[in-house]
Image (cartoon, rainbow, N blue to C red; front, side):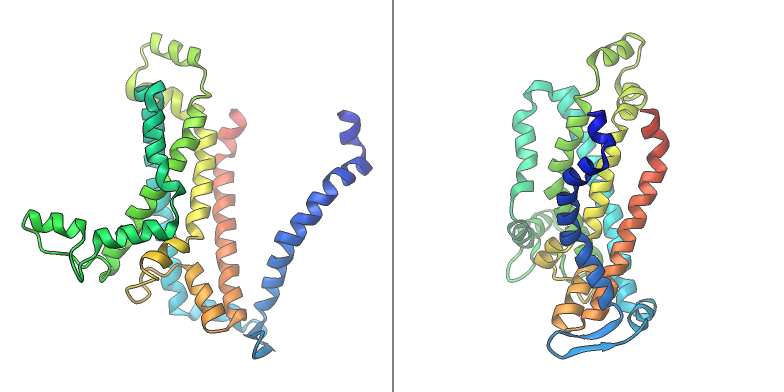
Length: 294
C-alpha cells in the first residue's frame, strides 16, 4: 500500500477518472455559471456584456435582502430544530427504548421517504381556512378560538413551514445521530455510572463529548441543506404571502427562468454559494480543536 501511495503515476491512474468526472459534473457548471454573472439576457434574446453590473445590483436589490434574511432565519431555526429533535430522539432510542425502538424509529423516519409535494399538500389541508377549516382551525374553534389564516400572514406562514420541515426531516437526523451514539463503548458508560454519573450529568460529561463528531457532521448537513431549500416552500406557500417566504433559491429560479435574466440569476446563485462556503468553513474551524482531540 505504501508503495502505491508513493507512486505518482499509480495515483494519477487511480484518481484521474474520478477527478475528471467530478470536474465535468461539478466544477465546469460552477465556472460556467460564474461567467454568466458578467452578462445580461438569456439564450433566446442573446447575451450582452454587463461587466460588474449584476454583482453591484445584489447590494441594492431589496428583494435580495428579503430573500437573504428569510434564508438565514429559516436555516438557523430549522437546523436547531432538526438537530435538537434528532438528538433527543436518538437519546430516547439508546437509553429509554433500547432494543424495542425499531417501531418508533420506523414511524419517525416514515416522513423522510414521503414526496415533498405530498407532505406540503397534507399541511395545506391541515392549516387551511377556506373553503373550509382544516384540522388545526377546527381544533381552535373547538376551544373557542377563531380561525387563523395561517398562509395569509408572513409570520404564521413561516412557522407552518418550520413545523412541516422539522417534522419531515427529524427522523433522518435521529437515525444519523443514533448511529453515532451506539458506537460509544458500553464499558465507558458503565464506568461513568459506577462513578455516580447518571441522567443529565452522564449525557453532558460522557455522551455529548463522544458524539460531537457525528453531531458536527449533522449540523453541516442540516445547515447546507436548509440554505438551499426550494421544493418544500414552492409546494407549500410558493414564496408567499407576497415575497415574505421566498428563499434565495426561489428568487434565483424566478429571475433566471421566469424573467429570463440568466446573468442576475447566476449572481444570486454565486451569493448563495459563498454563503454556504462561509458557513461550512466557520463550522469546520470552530470544531477543529474538538475533532483533533478525538
